[in-house]
Image (tube, rainbow, N blue to C red; front, side):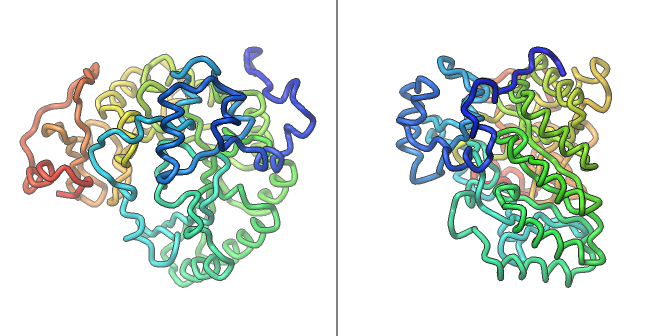
Length: 397
């Protein structure tokens, strides 16, 4: 591993590497946060004003990655509330993918015919400010009782088309080993389930959760994949690399899904360093997501042209498998954001085609942004003008 990759555990108290200690000692008050950084007025105000909207907490491990004096720190901006979250946004939308409408039972999202996203918990070690599921994470109403988990498992068992189950949340690795074994044993007992995947940010924000005991448990169930969520090279610590190594030695492939965010990773040098750093850790860069149009995240979103330009610039300048697929998730599935799928820009909307042939108009105004590339200007397709004039949630046209 590169010599510059720090071991965040170095010099910390003995309990530092106990993931349960980290969870018990998460930072969730302004006073506690002030022990780690010098909060700006915007952060102080954001902590107070966003409290009734979206909770926050930060593991000591992840707090140690933040620059105490730089409010533009790319780690800090991902997790510390800011008053910008309350500025006017395109929409007041908390379920842009219409997951509730695609949920035949509680917390089970059946969008594609052959796979489901099973939100097994609403708990996370850290609550990211750009979270896709702000509507549910940390909300007691979305925690699942054993009977509700079993109801979702029964739906999967009764639906032979489902071959792929993604365990997500919240973060499924907040479960202890006994709870995970209960869940996995029931899923792998279903004949038509071919693969189980974990979507977890634990290697990023709490790598000590990836214990030998956990890896031994996961190794009993194959095939299995883990997708994690590094967004910036500063998150690629030695502790994170060690966690990834434990998973790989247990025979579990690891991929990564990054969210493109303004001022955090939307420049070529940062994205290239992130992707190459992941490959050095033997993690496959899988997806680069366009940030969802979720209320309160406007200050983090970029023009789609920015991401398309980054993908163009990476090609030929780094290893081919170090380049993720740039996508937008929609209620009609993921759309690769490239010239084959994107038709062009119609004013404040980018118009594209989904895998099932639906034309989708994504609200994505340029405003003051001046991307290095431009999309062809196109007229609004049928009914898209109505979508643009209502300035509400993204809609199929």
